[in-house]
Image (tube, rainbow, N blue to C red; front, side, top):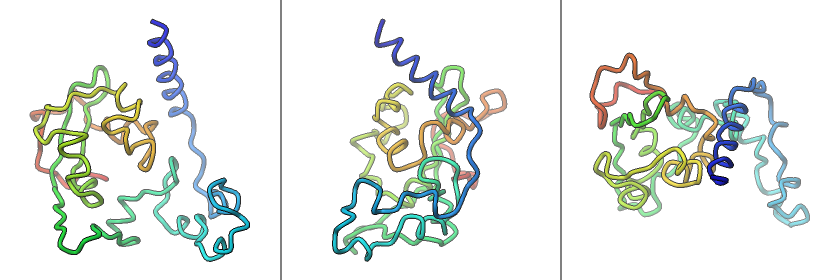
Length: 190
């Protein structure tokens, strides 16, 4: 019972925090300089050879959360052009298919856009380990995601944070008329 109360307190805090007004997007000063980030050696001989986060990230499409960058938008607008693989013979499959999950309690249904993920990652990054390929074969709940499992392995770490509920919970169950599961993407949003 104690553990349940702690989890409920965490969820309540996340909900309250996500409802707070977001700060305006600012210039390069919003990113911590490498010399002060606690990761890089400020006395290291190569510190001045590295590009400062503010110099690089301030040129990206802005976001108001996480690391302040809309990475999928940056990719699609050609602002960045990351390598899709290390080995040239590796073939990357971009899958333009959405999944709609409906087991969301009182929340809106979840839209998972494969395209936004497979433009960055090979299918093997998630399948068959984190998720089974067959829709519904991997059982997971929001508690798992908050604990860093399933979607939580990236979201909240290297992708947008879990406080952005509507980025995933984006389908109104009151107006959704289709079937849950795989969908042909309708030019979905990132």
